[in-house]
View 1 (tube, rainbow, N blue to C red):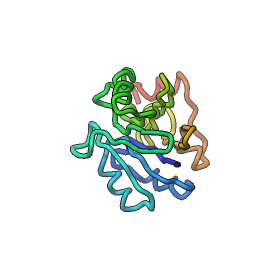
View 2 (spheres, helix red, strand yellow):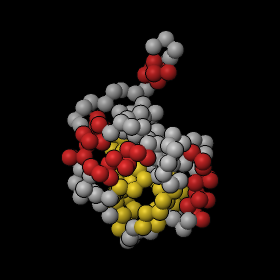
View 3 (tube, helix red, strand yellow):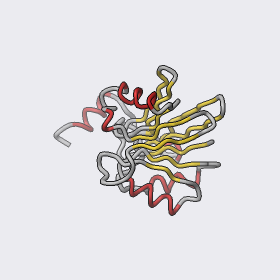
Amino acid sequence: MKILLIGDTHGKLNRLRDIWPKLRDIDLVAHTGDHYSDAQRLAKELPVPVIAVGGNCDGSGPDRQIIETEYGRILLIHGHREGVKYDLNTLRYRALEEDCRAVFYGHTHQSSILEEDGIYFVNPGSLTLPRDQKSGSYAIVRTAEDRFDASIVYYDTVMGKKSPSSGFLKSILNYSDRF
């Protein structure tokens, strides 16, 4: 199964619409929340199933979903109630309770792939409001019976644009009160 994992779109779907024609053989789109209504719109636009959860900015949507794959169960959750900005401990326990081998989560707007205690944790970041000094990101996840592969893809790379440089000076300018 090939899954497009997105999250924290916050009502802005233009970048997803930009990358969609470049994607091939997507079986499922999973949205980690913050703008559940975006996922509902995508379900009407895209030719593949869309599964989503609500986030802390949503008034609706389930708080978690289970995605059944040949690899095993994957927990789809936003993560704000599990404190993912601080650590993944509560999220790990939630995955164990749900008998899941992987977790898709959002909330931080920062992309991440981590394997811990045999559980994969994948955060696609945000295509529209990234907080990791990148151009915006999503994840592509491939599952098979004995395999779980996840990769983070950056918007500028896909669109053939040069990513802005990052570093100490850029981070100071981004968060300065002067600019």
